[in-house]
Length: 305
Ligand code: GLN
Image 1 (cartoon, helix red, strand yellow):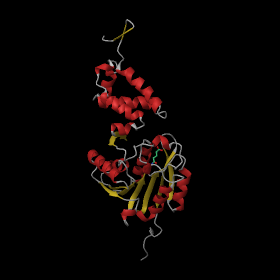
Image 2 (cartoon, protein in one colour):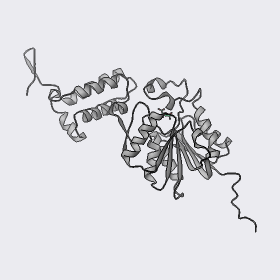
Image 3 (cartoon, helix red, strand yellow):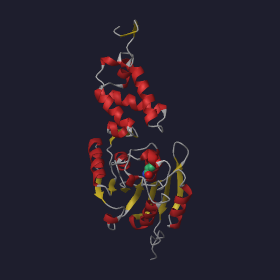
Image 4 (spheres, helix red, strand yellow):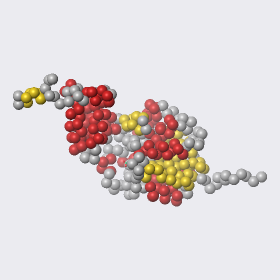
């Protein structure tokens, strides 16, 4: 085995596996909020991408000498990670509900928490044949696209204030084969006129301005994360506008912070929404609120003769 001669001793060359573990340790020093498993998983994904290896081939390659590989591209990615960029931006993609979404720094990285939002939304659509769905603040498009792919008869409108985000969402829809979505630039409901939907879904910004976790999220678009002093400024606007944009019997389904369950239920009830309930994420935290708009004008009793 080729190796370095140190002090007259033949030292076996460091394996790629040892190199990855040493880099994971260095990455955790540079980005203290990263857990070890996340750091290592990120580097595995990076090296697989850069060396064009499957996960299985990477496991085999880990036993080989690191110097056998051209690691220049990997090292450039590692430097970006050490500077605090999320792995999703370095790789340019993030898995969500088993599909891969392209992401750029213009959009929030899809979170596993948001799968709870998609599940709750899909459940609310079960009894509607060809639903009209609105996704407010679509970002990468992951929520709109998951709903559109699960319900091909649905017509989905994905709205974002940011044109660059809409370009990312539109590209994801094309790549993933979701043809039943139209994209529209809008400040929440502003450009939607009097359109009404069977379901309005949203993962809006909901982090409070002074939240201590914000520095760790500094690479993601602030406009997709932060919402006033209590994190509820955008949720208030979304809830307030829902009655004017829901069909009678339609649902509003929003994601919120783990501590905002009570506050968001209160907003829904104050707006006259019915059947209000909270869904918890996989970590057991309040994450999604759903409520139904029954229009006071909608008379369900049969007309008198
Ligand atoms: N769940 C995200 C976080 O706290 C915030 C996403 C959002 O504001 N919509 O990291």
